[in-house]
Length: 458
Image (cartoon, rainbow, N blue to C red; front, side, top):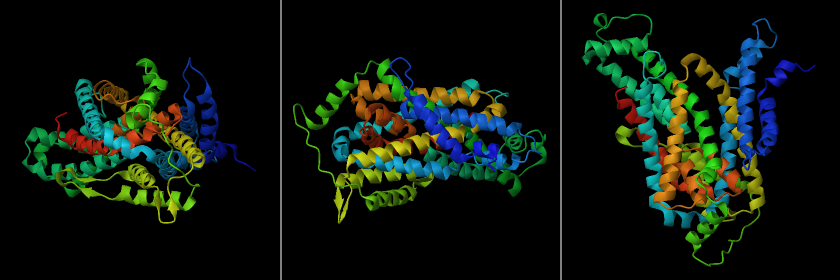
């Protein structure tokens, strides 16, 4: 006999329902606008909220309570599912967009670098400014560590979160070592952070124990995670809305942008000849995923900046773009026919958007109940400021067409869900070239920004 409670609060049930109802919701027209595949994200957020609300209301005596709480404690859907479908998506997008990546980098390379670095700089500046504006004794979560998490979340950067956690670990060890040399007021601030409410007196504690340093590190890392959990879904929502509404707000005519795109890359009046493609290669597709995952895992030491890695998403996408542009290596053909790639692209997209909604809906509910609206407000403003700045800089200063700029904005913010929205809105994989060319520099700038935030006075 099927247990109805455990059936409905089940990762697979919730994933499939988010996608099914999300795709129907995505077809609803709001004027001339509809959410498309992004509907799965919004339905996922709603179902996550329902699951959390129901799970928290279950009494301990309920026969399904333990199972439901276990699902909720794992954020409903394990993160490995998110990584899998995200990799499937970016592999398909990268291989399909690889045909023109060389021309794109040659023409826009320097502009993409500046766009990535300056967009994150604006995100950093707005994050810090808003933190100072909102800081008060009542804003319990507004610590340098939670704000660092908000920055990586607002820019939807999972590799940035890893970098933030790494720099947080190094920073807390440094604080533990210099505690004895600090004045009494600074020591008191550190003690209050380690053990809030215990009224420890700095005058009585001249040095921190190993246990206290570890406690400081654990709380700081938890603050980073909370900030990221709050910032991420709002960053995703803002960049998805930007991909859909910016063309209407700024009166960007998509048909004209397609003509600009073709003219800028190939010249006026030149007949575009599609490069020949081969059949879809299952071994080739999985080889790109394997090599890309390895590339993303490679960690490059940057001295005082810590280590830098592309992460699984960045590694796979850039590998797909590079190998796809080469075309054929030995018996394997990487310039594959479009139809299977479009199917895999759409499959991966709706799954990972649904999973984002399911994983973060409950996290936001918990964070709001515990920390209030401060981090939410900061997240929304930072994400919007970064996206708007990237649009204004890319379109009106660098004169980049919307087809590539939509991807480049997402790359500067390391926002793969945003890339999914751009691809879905334009019904083309072309934005991925702009994304892939901008992403590494946006990510590197995010790593540096995390370190800078830790050093600034709050």
